[in-house]
Length: 353
Ligand SMILES: NC(=O)c1ccc[n+]([C@@H]2O[C@H](COP(=O)([O-])OP(=O)(O)OC[C@H]3O[C@@H](n4cnc5c(N)ncnc54)[C@H](OP(=O)(O)O)[C@@H]3O)[C@@H](O)[C@H]2O)c1
Image (cartoon, rainbow, N blue to C red):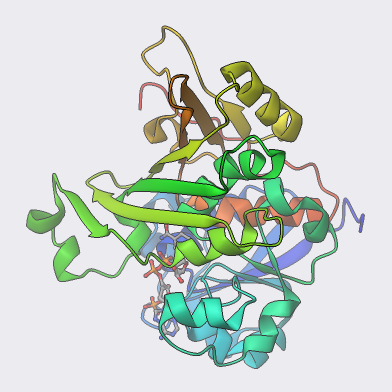
């Protein structure tokens, strides 16, 4: 669909949260989207700047209750897991396009969903109406999507870096071991005992050595030749606020060289506007580093091959709230509506940061 200059109205449910707030920040700067309403049950009647101080003087909207939503073209849902699957009819009645930032509609295989989420989906058939919003691996479907399922942040970071390797036949086995290090904003704005400053500050804490939910997305969306790939994901909290660094280990055939790996990434990502291969011989930042990506929609990928064993270590970094959430969806909307893909996502980051 192409409708370049038509302005679309967008509302955000759960706009007081971190992903909702980030969606708001990005959409406010987008020339073809007009933010119509933002909701928070807790803060209804208060200005958005009361909880998003970066928007002082930029946005004069006040939070409203979700029951007061009017119709709009596009509705973002930044709610805790489980809300959107239970309230689909309510939200679909308000907008032609839903953008769910939660994990409610990412997994199409009911058994896989149940295994990783620990309960049966309340409306499993709905996932078929949603398109997984990671342009680097799902561009064609995004172009004709009805609704969007935003990807998990760790899943986005690992999937984009591993997808070309799994698709190319360069790997000895379709198997990856992934260590994900993640900042505190990934757990959202609501405090918990584990996020209390004395407990969290300075931490380097293994919080999910096995069974992380984002494993399900990798099992579903990594390319396979009829058999599910093997994915072993462990997650560790760091004391950073934003950012994810994944370090994945895969094995390539012994005769393969780093030139082959470069070739695979070039073939897949040469024209991707937000993917950068970062592999410098000398600079301080030789490999991907999340702090350089704060506020940006980039995914930086680096790698190093151990020739004697065939072990290929793949590093990948993103900002969990941008490429790992709202930014990925805005990029997908740009593709869907025929807008330039970088629109609203031009921020290049800061240095020093
Ligand atoms: N944080 C990340 O890095 C990240 C990345 C990708 C995806 N996600 C997913 O995105 C979703 C939102 O995450 P977040 O980090 O933005 O969470 P958050 O900061 O905790 O925000 C949650 C929002 O949902 C609202 N809310 C909470 N409980 C509600 C309920 N029962 N009914 C209606 N509204 C309710 C809150 O509004 P009130 O003001 O009314 O309390 C708040 O606006 C989650 O499903 C998360 O898994 C998060």
